[in-house]
Length: 196
Ligand SMILES: [Fe+2]
Image (spheres, rainbow, N blue to C red):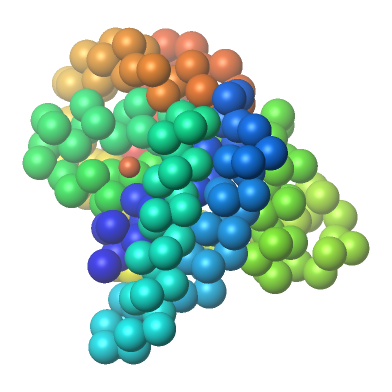
């Protein structure tokens, strides 16, 4: 529940800030983020609450439609080579990486993250955008901890000796070109170093 929930949340967040997002996809992404943030913990903690699972399923579909039309971002570019190499469930890899990438993107996408924070009632609609964007990242980090996911990829198997190969594989990903902030090889290596 934690892994697939975080995968759906990552689809919603990455499609929202994708370079190829459209008004059609951002509406789906924003509502998916709102539904997931309101239901993911209950679905995880009390699996038998059917309404929470139903909203997670609906949000996953909406985020999936947005993802299929707008693309993803740097989380997915890194999650694939990392997941395949160490057998980390895809959603777990996404859940670990998402806060790192949102922090990396903050400089260029803070209005978008502020929008998601306000839509999900993490801050009042009148909140300062910088503060709202920062609260969104902190929310993702706390959610990762509450759902029992590791705070770093090294806790799931990442080895320092592999990071250059992983960065090179991530550079070939189509998802990387959708990321709102341009990502260089050095940026990928820095993000992977932070995960050791
Ligand atoms: Fe995914």
